[in-house]
Length: 179
Ligand SMILES: CC(C)(COP(=O)(O)OP(=O)(O)OC[C@H]1O[C@@H](n2cnc3c(N)ncnc32)[C@H](O)[C@@H]1OP(=O)(O)O)[C@@H](O)C(=O)NCCC(=O)NCCS
Image (cartoon, rainbow, N blue to C red):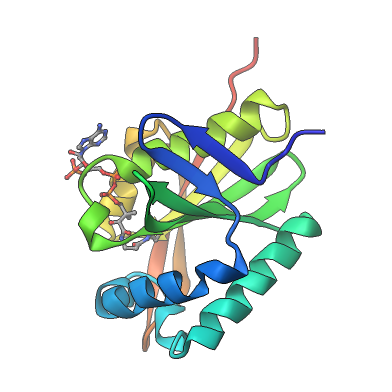
């Protein structure tokens, strides 16, 4: 059976399931990036104590064990850079989610992390279709989808509530080509 707990992609990238011992470092990163992340993600305002990060990690690990989702810490040259993973699975289709600390933005880290994650699950025969959704105004995230060759699928009005307002989502799709 394939081990989906950790992936090394030399020279810099490592994806690993979060450990409970990662809670302080993850909490510190979210704290430092809270204002920035809260512009495009719904959950950062809810992370106010290290126990919240710990509870998330426990939930992530439980969801991984039960096959509901797969959340990975991105390490770049050994340093925690952010998170990437599958928020949901639906047969051989999965929905991708991600964020990076500002120190790691604009360097191709997320493009490489998402590509590595997709290749990992495709090459082991687990997945063949990927969904990526992001706010229509989230240029960096739309570019990640486009750079990775995702096709625009549809626009979902009021796709998510961020802070006090709803944002429309661009939904992208990528599927393994037949033959
Ligand atoms: C969305 C997010 C992950 C994108 O991060 P990012 O750094 O722009 O994405 P990448 O790691 O793919 O980097 C691409 C950028 O690095 C540059 N780059 C440098 N080297 C590169 C390389 N080898 N390969 C690809 N891009 C490279 C590119 O020029 C590109 O910049 P551009 O988009 O201005 O052209 C990040 O902005 C983020 O965390 N935002 C806040 C949270 C969020 O919105 N999450 C998504 C919710 S849907």
